[in-house]
Amino acid sequence: MKLFRKILIITLLLLIVATSLIFIIGYSYYANALKEKPLLSRIEEITSKENYMSFEELPDVYVNAVIAVEDHRFYEHGAVDPIGIARALYTNIRDGKFDEGGSTITQQVAKNVVFNQDQNIVRKIGEIFAAHDLEKNYSKDEIFAIYVNSSYFGDGYYCIYDASKGYFNKEPKDLTLSEAAMLAGVPNAPSVYSPTVNPDLAKKRQKHVLSRMVEYGYISQEEADLVE
Image (cartoon, one colour):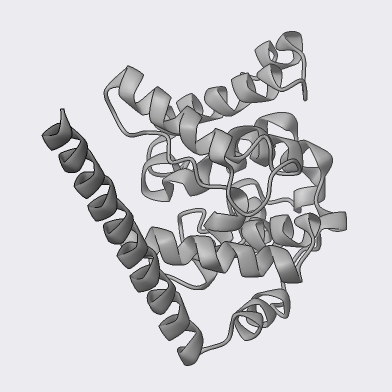
């Protein structure tokens, strides 16, 4: 019994040390990125772009579609959502595949603005530190706007305005429910869900967005069923 207790204590200590080291390395990764260019300067580059759209200029139907599919508790949690992470882990284990990431919209802004797209634990930790800094300096509405103005939508479109004009030849304010749901689903995997690359998969993703909008009360099932 004493031996088991010692092994347990040593294991816990090793786990604490390993976790601490990962967080230290993750923070260093983030700090090095800021040496290249400060966070606020990176954000200013995005907000000063010609086609940048403020939150007030975005249509509700598109905002609701993005929040429903990407981070439905966006206005309720901080930079990181423990509930979302737990839910993603459960879903991935249940389904036997890793489709759910658990990242908040703020974390995705950090990924878009500060880091590259490489998937590794160090970058994910650095992403958490960047997300906290974003939420200290910007409102939720501002972060949402930065997200849709810095996301890649496929076909060379790097913001919601260009994607809306490119795919549907209209400004975002004129998007229909069908179009808004389509665009909300693309940034998750632009090479897969771009309407011009994989129309069938794009449509499947659109249906997923609509089902989330129904689930979280943004639209009725009848409205979703009318989208062809």
